[in-house]
Length: 385
Length: 238
Image (cartoon, rainbow over all chains, first blue to last red):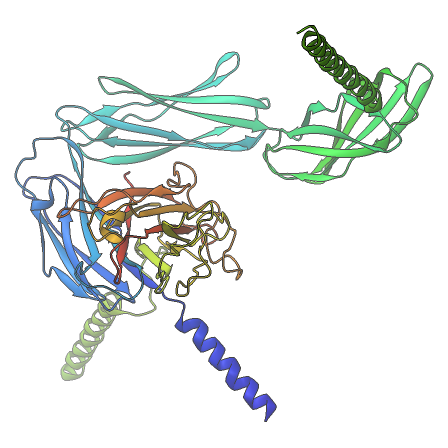
C-alpha cells in the first residue's frame, strides 16, 4: 500500500516536472540553397517546418532579391511544408553575393495580454544565396593543409572558384617555404575553369626530406591577375622543449613548488612526460626530485610541478639540471637543460611591524606635545589679559 | 529424311534465338547480376536550422511597490525583481509586500542546428511601453536584460541553463552585463540586437540564458503587463 502511494506520488511529481517545463521550438530544413546566377533562372526549394508550436507561422522573404521569390503559401499552422520558387530576371546589375532570407516566424499578437509578464516567440531564417558573376575574370582561391610528423605526407587542398563571366586557364604553383627560403616548388596541371565553376585540387607533399620545424605553403594562381593564398603548417618529431622553470625559491622549512614549462614538438600524443630536477654545487649533488607525469596533446604547452624542501639551502645561486623524459608511440626520449636557480631568505615582516609601530608612536607623541604647547600658550595669553 | 533435317535446323535456330533473348533479358532486367565492379551509394544530408526556448516564460505574478520601504535599494520608489540569483543585484525586494513570485531562472535558449548560426533577439515593448503603459511616470520604470553562457545553474538541476563555449571562435556573446532593453518605436518594427554572431552547434555548448531585471515604478499604471521576446536563428554568411 505504501509502495503504491509512493509510485503514485512519484508519477505525479514527474508529471508536474514536465508540465511546468515550458518549451517552444522551431526547426526548418534545409537551411538554404546556393545558385549561380543565370538569366531567367527558375528553381524551387521545398522547406520542411517542424516544431511544437500551436500558433500560426508567417512565411516571407527579405533581401534585395526578395521580389524574385514567391511562395505556395504564406503561413503554416504550427508546422508543415511550403515551396519557395525563385525566378530570376535576365540581368542583375550588382555582381557578387546576394542573400534572400526566408523568414519563418511565430506570429505575435501585440494586443493580447498573455499569461506571464515575459513570454517568447521564435523565428528561423534559412537563406537562398545567389552568386552573380563579376564582369571579366574573377577567381576566389583558398589553400588548406595540416600538421604532420617527419616522413608523413601532408595534403594541400586548393579550392578555385571562378566568380567572373570569363573562362580561366590556370596553372597553380605551390611553394613550400622554410625559415631559409623556398624549400620545394610543386606545379599543378594546367586547367580550364568555366565561368561560375568551382574545383578542388589536392597536392600531396612527402616530408621524408624535411626536417622538423615551421613551414609555410603558398599557392600562386595567375589568371591575368596573380592571386595567392597561404597556409602555415608544422612538421613535428618526438621532442619536448623546456620553455621555462621556477628561477627563484624561498628558503623555508616546507615543500616548495618547482614548475617546469614544456612544449611538445610532436604531431601526436605524448603519453608520459616528467622532469627529474637535480640541484648540485661544486661538491656534487645536493638534492633531486621528480615532477608529476603528464600527457601532452600535439604541440601542447604545459606546466609540470615537483616539490622539495628548501630548508638546507643557503642564499645564492645554485646549478640545476632539468632532465625531461617522455614517451610516444613506444619510443622513449629525454632532453636536458642546465639552469641557475636563486635561493633567497624570506624577510621577516616582524621587523617592519616594529619600525612602523615606533614611527606611529613618535608621530602621536609629537602631535600630543604640539597640542599641549598650544593649550599652554593659550592659558598664558588669558592670564596676561 | 529431308523433313527431319528441316525440323533439326528449325529447332537449332529456335534454341539460338531463345538463348540470345534470354541473355539480353538478363543483361537488362537482371537482379543480383553486376555488370561492373563498381557501385554507387547516393545520399543527401539535409542541413537544419533550429531554435528552442527550453524555458520560455517568466511570471512574477501580482504585487505592488512597498512604498514605505526606505532601504538603500528601493527608496520606496520601485519594486526590484530579476531572474538572476547569482549576481543578486536586482533580486526581489520588499518581502513584506505580498504578491510577487520570485523567479530564479531566465529564459533558456538552445539551438540544435547542424551548422553555425547567429542568434538575434527582438523585443516588442521597451520599459516605457511594457511597464509604464506609454505614460510618462516619475520615477520611470526600467527593463533590463543580459545573456550568459556560464554553466552555473540557477535551478540547481544540472546544465540546463547557459553552456560555456556556445559563442566561440568568430562568435562573440553580447549583452554580458545588464543593459536596458532597446527603445521600441510605436508603431514600427521591433528593435533587434545580435546576441551571438556565431553559435557553436555541439550538444555540450549550445545554450544561452537570458536574464531579466525590472524596476517597477511606484507610479506605474496598474494592470497586467506583458512583453514578448523573439529569438531568431539565421544561417551565417559564407
